[in-house]
Length: 218
Image (cartoon, rainbow, N blue to C red; front, side, top):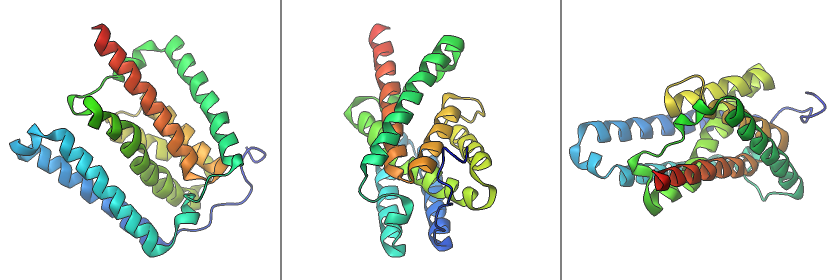
């Protein structure tokens, strides 16, 4: 483990940035949930509400990143060739994990389905671009980093992946549990959030493609 990962810990992020970032995400998600559940007009335009939510979250994070000057500390600087090597390495792991899970536990892919609000071009952009960027900032850039400062690599990877899985399906065991672990390990190895964002985009694109093909067949 020590040979694979960098020996040094991450630099500490400003505590106010971590707190405001998590608060932004929680409040935005709660507001969207309330709007969709309580207002029939919003429920009829669920896709637009969620796209708007993600854009607001991105704008909020952009403001916080600029205010606290943490662009480089988060790993959002210009990607390097080393980052590309880590990305390709973990991409190969993702493909191998996908094949293995599909071979041993095909029932896990019962979750590979798209809700109505993810259909169409807006749904594609939401799932393959907006969601990966926002979720990597939250679960790896904020949550994993907060846990990493206190608990080290192994426990922080596992706990952050559990939260990632629970948020998506309300389940401890789901494909997102493995995805969350891989994304966190890639972030730990590369120290670049772009690597985990790229992996997340690739995974979501694969899920979207599988879902569309299934819909087309059925």
